[in-house]
Structures are given as structure tokens and as C-alpha cells.
Image (cartoon, rainbow, N blue to C red; front, side, top):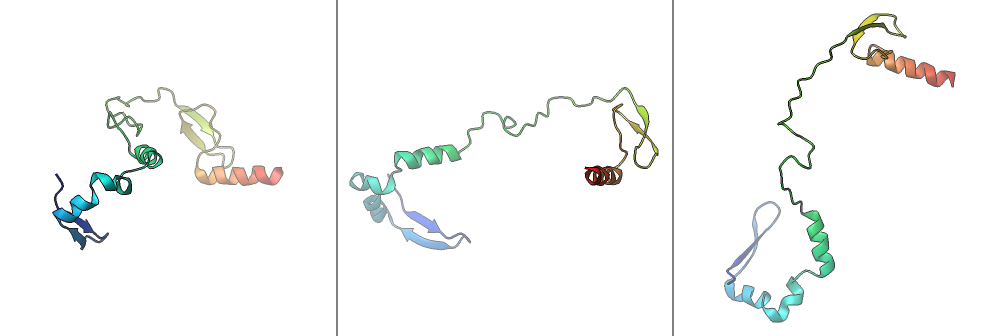
Amino acid sequence: MISGIKIYKGDGTLKQEINQAEARELYNETNKSAWELSPTERRHWDNMTVKETQPYEYKGLRPWIKRSYKWNKQYKLKCIMCKKEMIKANSKALICSTTCKNAHLREVRKNK
């Protein structure tokens, strides 16, 4: 059974109202090709819909995993640009900050 149809504009105001008799005329079996999706359109529409089985599956978030690990070792190192001492978790760290990193990259590009 088809009831009346209301069509709204993007701003939420009523654009058109179709009563029950006109709706039956539009969506009857003889006019099926006008309102039914073609196989290509159906595939396109099905690809647009996301079938999520679990809410976090596609987002990469897993809140049930405890992420409270800490670095056990800390290394005292010297920055290669400003020669200040720094404490890092990685023993191969060379640069203390983004300003030193940018200065180092400029220097490397200049020496190429």
C-alpha cells in the first residue's frame, strides 16, 4: 500500500505533495522501469552503503585494548644541531625539536 508522498527542498521547506491516487499511478507495475534502479545503478548504490558489523571495525579504533605501555629505557643524548642534552626513548634519536629538525633538513638539502 502506498500513502501520500511529501517531497522537501534542501532547506526543509515543502516542495511538492503527491496524494495517494497519484502515488499509485506513479509506482504501478506498468511504470516499473521509471522508478526501479537498473542493475548498474543498483551496484553503484550498494557500493555506497557501508555494512558495518562492528562499530569500530573500519575506523581502526579498539577501545578495549589497554594502551598503557611505557618506555622502560631513557637515553641521554646530544642534539646534532644545538648541542643541548635531551632525554629520548630511542637511542638513535639525533634531533631535539622541530626547529632543529628543519634546520638540519635545510643544511642537508644545501649540501646535496
